[in-house]
Length: 61
Image 1: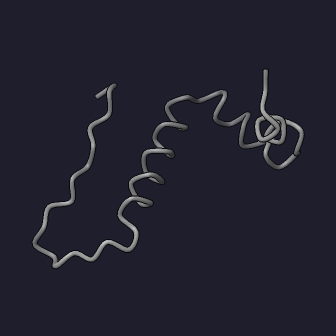
Image 2: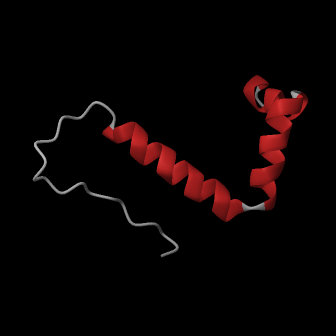
């Protein structure tokens, strides 16, 4: 079963290219996702500069 959003990933030619890249390289997907998620959760957070930014460890480290 696939959701309409899932179908769009394989039906659209531009999305399909990205799907194929990540389907062939799971590590690339998780590395890219990790970087994007980290950037997302730190957006707009004001830091004074002396705080340590916590980076979550990966399960495969």
